[in-house]
Image (cartoon, one colour):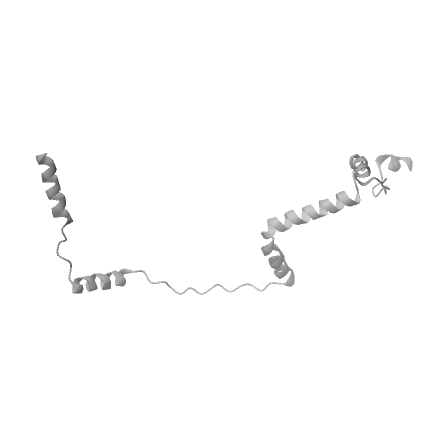
Amino acid sequence: MQDDLDLDGLFAKAAERGPLPSAALLARIEADARREQPRPMAVAAPPRPARGWGMILADVLGGGLGGGRGLAGLSLAAASGLWIGVAQPTALSPVTEYLTGTSTASLELLPSDLSLLAGE
């Protein structure tokens, strides 16, 4: 128990507030700290090169669509969708007929190999 009382006495001494630094000392420390702080430097933006309308349009479209990669992916998806819609694969014809309940007319946009060989 004696050790606990000694320890309590040490904690009580540690909890006592010591002498506070003077206001002048704190002001000098603050002035020294402000003097050592790095100052931001003014940096001028580099001039932008002259650009044509195509680059401006690409920036406007590409910036909102994820840049060049996003614009390229969107273009590829649009072209693929248009191609699949116009030249429907023959495997999808029965599915389309079943879903719509109507028969689809087919138009051959690209000649098959047999029609190329028949002209010889």
